[in-house]
Amino acid sequence: MFIKNFKQLSYKDVSEAGGKGASLGEITNAGLSVPPGFVLLANVFDRFLEETDLNAEIAAVLKKVNYKDINSVDKASNVIRDLIDDQDIPADIKKEILVEFKKLKSKFVAVRSSATAEDSSVASWAGELETYLDTTEKNLLENVKKCWSSLFTPRAIFYRQEKKMLKTKVSVAVVVQQMIDSEISGIAFTVHPVTRDKNQMIIEAGWGLGEAIVSGQVTPDAYVIDKRDLSIIDINVAKQEMMIVRKAGGGIKHTVAPKAIQEKQKFNGKQIIELAKICAAIEKHYKKPQDIEWAFAKGKFYITQSRPITTL
Image (cartoon, rainbow, N blue to C red):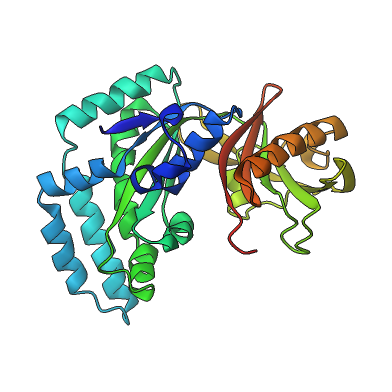
């Protein structure tokens, strides 16, 4: 089996679908509003490496790396990523990816790396790998390969050395998910990340696509909610001059936010509470505090990611 859709996955499938893929399956099956998608399982990448004989080549390149020299790491990363890029995905797998893509009936998808490792440190890989938003059928296969090769960015190579994981089998699954053209998006922490107050949840919201907030490029509105009675404790409206939006033909661009909305509050009270209820339900489902990514389009909330808060 190369591909599973979200409905076929749960949190037990981390070893084949990676953390992101397993989590999206879990919350889909919990009945939450998740944009549909599928996961190209980690065994596909393993097979790709085997069939193309890249395993030995990659090992040889990594063996020569001098970790004290940043240029040496950069060079190894470029060589390995080019090797992966130059090889073709096996024909039967290629066909299956395109069949599943068509089932999503979406012109644009987000393509995300979802790492799998044999030990518990897999959670911390989350930030190391790449995401390609607004991917179209034309560059889908290319972006799948880029997700695979993001296992070998300079940061990921360093990370593996630092965590003494050079001998650990690390692989990568790829999540392909219908892209929501969000008018507003952001993140939520079901426990206040600063004060660590378990009775408080914080929601951060900004105009446009969520990448701007996740990567810290804009200051979002921040809403603090009391989880006991879902009352709003604090509303902090941030001025937002820049937003990330979709380009007509695919891909994303940074643009100036329209003057009329720059200082406007992103959500009214009713919407804040609606989102808080969804986030509380996710926390209840997982029985532990969650860091949630969400999007809002055409009057509806979508959950695009949920993971345990690792810093608590």
